[in-house]
Image (cartoon, rainbow, N blue to C red; front, side):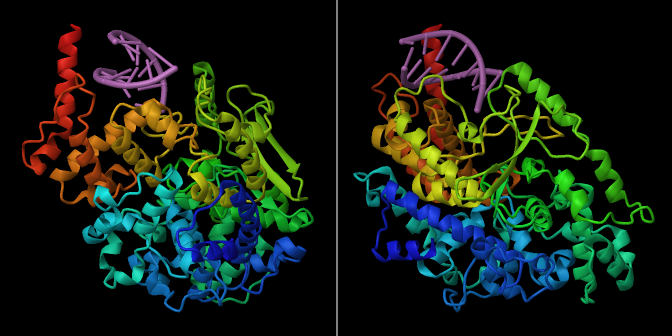
Length: 610
DNA sequence: ATTAGGG
DNA sequence: CCCTAAT
């Protein structure tokens, strides 16, 4: 992918033909997979994809310098690495000050930290940036922090290439938005305020069970040995602690994986529930692999989307079995930590079952992933796990649960999630279908790549955010919630500006043909939200905080401004068709009117109907 | 079938 | 996001 992308970007405004891209993507997939594996080990790690010579040892490799790790994560080889690409260039580093000290248990695994970030797009964007120009680019979210930059991001409407198709639109915008390379932001001070700031450092240190802190190095060594079946000569306590904790968590909470999350760390989305494992990698290798992959969410998820509910979605083979086989049980009896205790208690899938039955009764058509646990309460009929061998000889391991049918469904059929849409005759659903099939084959090899792929191509084609989600506390279950990506929002804005408010079907057909899951209603709703946001934004100077609070993806202020503009030009509903926008007032007041206009419109409407 | 609007 | 009423 690197090479391909580079070539493409040389040509200036890189526009991909969709078909060609698929080929490219599949290439990239391999590399990506390979690189990811490499991340776990040191740089000399043998490419698992090529000759499967990967050794378990690499998974337990001694810590290396953080630069190395990070660079590896970005899957950069030294040739490709931009000299400027230092620690200080990474938001995570910036945000956390002294990493070594501050998040002890995570010290040697910045890689994991990064990947666990829910806003995976961050990394993604960075990767893209690197890939394209060898420069680390800031993701869009920065623009919401730096007003001056955001202005660049969304120029006054004139600069938009309206005539072009959606893809080019995306590209244009994207380049404008993301080409803000980090070096322009010398005083990265503000970056710590980024809503998406990677690594919630705080809390991490608290995660480490206190008993680990109290252990001597020797004891840690023992724990390490009993856990991983090998000794380590590393004397660094932090490192040991981390490893032990890591193994511990995997061991005690295999299914739920990422228990870091419990400590306030969010995990990445593992929507696709599978990772690609070279076929002839012996099981002994797969096991730790899957554990690590699963728990640390190495398998790329879908970034932008959901907050934390996906922690249980990690689906890495039969981890229950795997865990037993892979790790010598740790002697926990001596130290029955609160951690393990609670973890074990939490393992039962009761909550899940409840939700499941609820969903079934409600006849929802979305699927939910089954958390994998060693003591399945759910009947095996409902819980499905299987190992598939894809045509490339790889092993696709995933587990899937289909709440609706309760029967096993080929992943390819379910791959396209989201509303099936009652009648999609309008759209180019045929094309979509075939593409998705292709996506599937790709996704089997590397989930992560599929994300990259679809974002690059036509964002969200085969997205997987549309999962039933639950929030234990609030009990809120948003069924097909698929987070709007920035690009989608921009497409929507673009569409509105071009076709006007209310032409949702048009907009959908013309700009969202690739994302079948967005209905015209969705567009309308989103627009409504955008209006609200754009209005609210005026009042709150400090939107970043606000957005943080709302946990929604940051919408660049520039976009919102544009929304406001459009809300003036196109008063929300086509109020009586002829309602003049009453733009007489100053822009500011008009902006704030964006909503009130719509309100009044509604009122009028009501009055008429009554 | 599409849109507006409420929940 | 879901549902419904209105068109």
